[in-house]
Image (cartoon, rainbow, N blue to C red; front, top):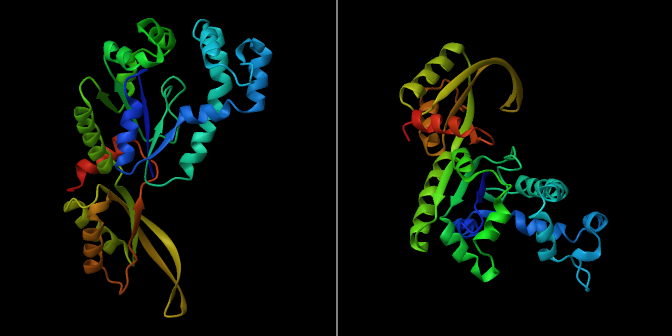
Length: 296
């Protein structure tokens, strides 16, 4: 599992980027869709009715987005109140969806930086676009330049978000160019998401150190740790007990077959157990370090 937090300016094209990523197999979790469902919650409806009265509701019952916008985008206090009401629920639902997902996951979150990047996001992408193009994309909604200003005036400045993001996509050309940017992003994501952590055991410290050093010298791994362990295991139906040395290593997925071959050839055991799995959580800096040090 590798989670990308996707955000961007209003009308910059983040949903288009998400759609393109989904074409390449990414699972998309959209915050706006979750918000739409949350607005059906009776406790939410009661809270906004108690605060703003019946004026925000249609004759048929559902709240009117336009009325709510007129309130929250003109009064920062009301804007902050509504964010505090809605967004914790959105984040909780997104987290639940993420934790039950596998593979590459894209969490499309308009207020990713404003509300704090969640702990479960591994990598952030910010989509930007010139104001004139953003206005043009929102003409069908009846939004002009002032409306974009109104909706963004209490957000973190664009330049601050650009600097905070791990990757920036400038959507200022056509769809073909945007797709090219997305493909470059996807190539990078595939590389940094393939970092692995694995281990094997040896019967002596000298053997563990010798194999670990060889793996490092050949740049098959970025680092190793050797730890003494008391092992219990079954061998030919008998319960065995030994003092062993656990070698923990960090590498990349495509090097695992070579690591396995080296360990088997150099190992004194008839059946050395070598396992590895993708790293669940690691900073971008750690992932880059592993990639740079391994000859992948």
